[in-house]
Structures are given as C-alpha cells and as structure tokens.
Image (cartoon, rainbow, N blue to C red):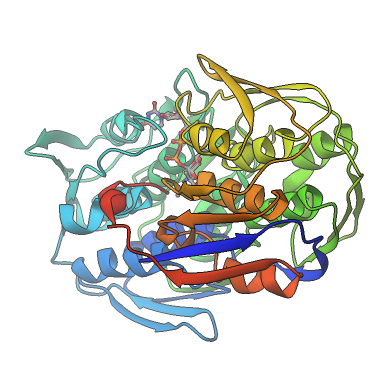
Length: 434
Ligand code: EPZ
C-alpha cells in the first residue's frame, strides 16, 4: 500500500509524453475473445486495470503474453470452453463486463459476475443486458451472475441510451456481439467516445463490417468469423487532460506530447475561458498558465462534451479561481467524492444535487487526504501540487489503476512528489471502478 507525499508550490515545466488509453485497451482486450487467431495490442500502458483484465481473459481460457516493457499484449483465445468470469476478478474492475458480448457472440454462452458497486455512483448494466436481449439472447441474473445464452444472435434496430445519454461500455459490448450476429444491427444513440471509435476500428481490421463509426448511429452487418489483428491503441485523452490541468494549476509551462488534441477540445475551450493559454499542435498541446484563473461553469456530457473523467481535476483548479465557478455532473450525479477531501485542503465547495458551487480561495493548504476513486485521486494530487506545504495522498492504488508511474513523470516536470509505504489498510480495494 503506497501513498504520495507532495510538497506543493513547484511550477511544472518541460515535456511529458502520453501513453495508450486505458479505456481503449480494456474493451479491445475483450475483443480478442471474438477470434481464434492472435490479437496483438500495442502501446499498452502498464496499469493495474490491464493486469486485472489479463486475469479475466485467462480465466476464460486465453493465453496471454504481456511484454510490459514494450507495451505489447499478445492474446489468443482458441479454447472456447470456459464461459465463466468469476466475481473475484470482476469485482476489481468494471470494464471486465465487456467480455459478455464477445462470449455470447462466439461461444453462445456466458456466465459473468455482475461487476459490483462503485464509489462514483450506482452504475447499472441494464442497457448492456437489454442490448443483448434485443439481439436474441436469453438472460437471467442469478446469485450475482449474468447467465446468458443464444443459439445465434440476430441483427436488430435498437436505441441504446439512458437519461444520462449514451453508454460507452454498453455500446462496446453490443457492437462486439453484433459483429458475429446474423444480419444487420442498427444502434441508435451509440456512444461517440474516441475509445469506442478505436474499438470499432480494431473490429473492422478483424473483418467486421461497421458503418457510421464516430457517429451516434452504428450499422453493423454480421459476418461468420473474425480474424486476428495488430493494433496500436490511441493516446489516453484523460491522462493528457490531467497533465494539462497539472501544468495550469501550478502556473507552469508544459508541452504534452503524443496526444490527440481533437479529443480534448471541450477541455481546451473551458481552460481558455479560465484564462489558460493553450497552443494546439497536430499531436501536442502547450500549456502556459496565467497568474490567476477566471471562474467558469462546466457541465459534463457524453463526448464531444466535457468528459466526466476530467471533472474532478478541473474542480481542483477552480478551487483557486477569482470568483464562483459551477460544475454540473450530468453523467454520474454522485461523482463528488473528492469534494470532502478538497475541503480538508481549504477549498470552499458547496454541493447542491449534482452541482458543485466552488468559491475560489487565494491558495489551498497542504493536508493529509485519502484517495477513493481514480480520477478523484488525480484531482487530489493536482491540488497537492498547487497547495502551500505538504499533502499526503493515501491509497494511491486507485491512481495506479489508470496512470502509469504518474509520480515519476510529474517529478520529471519539476514536481516534488514521493511515493512512500503507507500504513492505511486497502479498505476500498474491492470497489469496481473503471
Ligand atoms: C466508461 O464507463 C468509462 N470506463 C468511465 O471511465 C467513464 O466515466 C464513463 O464511460 C463515461 O464516460 C471505461 O471505459 C472502462 P457509461 P461506462 O455506461 O461505460 C448510465 C474512468 O475513470 N448507464 O457510459 O461504464 C450510467 O449510470 C472511468 O476511467 C445506465 O443507466 O459508463 C451513467 O449515468 C470511470 N445503464 C451513464 O449511463 C447501463 O447499463 C453513462 O455510463 C449503463 C450505463
């Protein structure tokens, strides 16, 4: 169990390169279940969630070679017998639910544990299940497991959405199932997130027929079989965005390299409104921060709107803006677990329903705080970098789930951050995030 000890007040400068996207890699790994051939995935970040997904695939008979140094995964799923993804593995990470669609499509049967609760909100999987049922699967939820079978999935027209809009992993799951179904599936209100686009491109390379990639309407014509693929995943836009905010919050001047600025337009627009100077290159962003930030309002929305996965980090920055900012959380109304910890650092934030009203203070002050979810932990680290004095962030295994060696990389930009052993027990370890 580790913690970070941060001495705030250092201006970040220099360059940082972004790794492969966690939320692309995880569903793409599940797509390997759709073929007997080898699936090679490159630019794989070294993350706890990737290691967890490897274990899920191995429990389903996959042979996996993971060259962590080179960031390459080789996965072969030619043993089609196992169909059970057990609770012990599923409980650690929500993205593991992505095995449901491929198992049903290829093995015609799946027994997959419900992924379990999560500190950022309830996170149901009803849309995943409804999508599979509409493709002709029979589904029962028994003793915490989704038991699904189908003789052959059949294409349909379906609307895939909730009151919060589209579903990212739900779209991934249903698209993967539809690639091997009989006939055409039309998915209205499909998620348009770059990670869904990346998955669809992989499936196309495997021989799937998918039209409308990147739009809200996907048309999938089923094929009898898919083949192997060699694919490098897209850059992680949330990691890139986190470094952008880290540069801004410390008054720094940082170039974030190897990223896709088009995937970050909503963040760029909001930061510019707050007074941050951002220069956009083809694969890089340069951030030059002002002395003080202007207050802004932000609403999280499905892509291309402002991502919920950057809400906490932006909130950390707004705690020291010159005035009152508002953050409306439209995807996960309860995703405010970081608010109480930011209070401990002197932030003034009032929560009303799914809105946080942030009254900027001149400076945060360092304090001991506790991480309890991935992006919330990143926000606490950013707050610590900007605060006066020392901040300790406990339970950083949350941050290790989604950011590769973030402490080392921040240090190279001039941050004073150290990883130390902690004496706090891993209480929340079982909560399924991601
Ligand atoms: C993905 O989760 C990401 N995870 C999350 O990132 C991200 O916050 C989220 O998309 C939204 O962008 C991965 O890609 C691994 P959703 P996902 O289904 O797909 C409701 C991170 O920090 N809903 O798009 O599970 C749901 O409650 C993580 O990296 C249903 O009602 O999210 C939410 O309000 C955290 N029923 C909304 O839809 C369902 O069956 C969007 O959720 C499914 C979702």
